[in-house]
Image 1: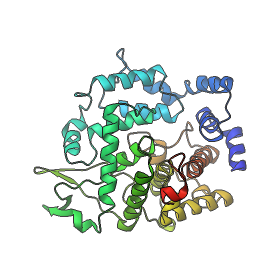
Image 2: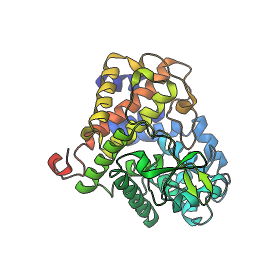
Image 3: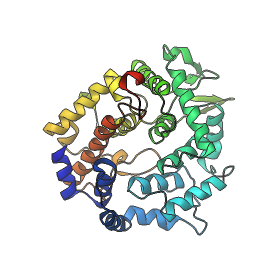
Length: 353
């Protein structure tokens, strides 16, 4: 860890250095944070999204698109800006006001249907956007957190995918009434804390263990009347991995999923995920695997509602690639240690680890 921190301190972009000090080391001084924030505001991607915001504080584009509010809030918070920044607070204020009209565009055709099917639609995406900014006190966010918990609780009882799926016109679909977690369920729990109690922590651990046992999880659509609708299942198909078969996009989805699982706090209690964590530590220590060569893919470097992990301006050099991968690895290690005994004040025995 010490060598990775030193490398990032000397080579990383302002966003990584700010988040390293603020989120991992916890030792950033006010003056340093202010100076780094000023540098971050000069980032080309930050300038791009701020320029898209209109006088009302809204981006008048499809919210669930690479240039919409969902991606904008994700990028700005990942880059290190807080919820008090006018760009973020303005978008959140408008998103709250537009409770019945924010999901125009592609979400207008499927988002409400996915909500009705309990597969994570417009309202869950809206809650995740608030969660990115650390805002989980809103009633509508709490309601979606409960739906996410319900979806994980449901999957913890699933014995096989055949139990919850059927065929419709040759396509695999969820049976009526089935609730199944997708990437937004995972993100919502990862970026919120109000749900963390011993019983829910045990349940989420058991649900992730069941997702491991069900892997590889096939693509399954929701069926609304006669319409097939794809839920947000990005990075949610393979919880049991074979690193020897990984391509660049697989590495990105794995790093993203591991960060979310570490934030949730389940890694120590799920043997297969703990094995993957141990492999990450060994790769980090000896520079093998994902650190050995640059695995460039748009999932890493192009930001949208699903993809994007690179905080460095570009990956023209391996140095920038390593800065991003070292930072994500340190985040995973940090949350592994911080949340292995969640919720705060309970022992590992109470949580079930």
